[in-house]
Length: 124
Image (cartoon, rainbow, N blue to C red; front, side, top):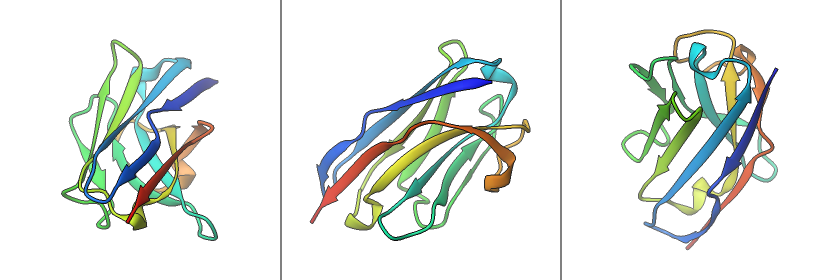
């Protein structure tokens, strides 16, 4: 089992940037794909971005394409989400997750372990 701890959330103005981090421990981190999801109040959880085990490929939701970037440092067992040009619609709790596959995937049922989430609030 892997444990995931997100950090870096907070309050930012429209157009601002934040970088989220997700530190992993437990199961071998570098063998598996990772992803970020988010859930806004009253809405279902949605996929944001995923990255392959090596970091060589990513897949990104259309709603954040061109603004959000995922990366990983396997030596540090950490995955990052760089968020630029933030909008109020990006306000949500952001969760990182580790998949049971090696390739980047947008499908939530491939993700087996989840962090506790970090709040991101974008003010207008």
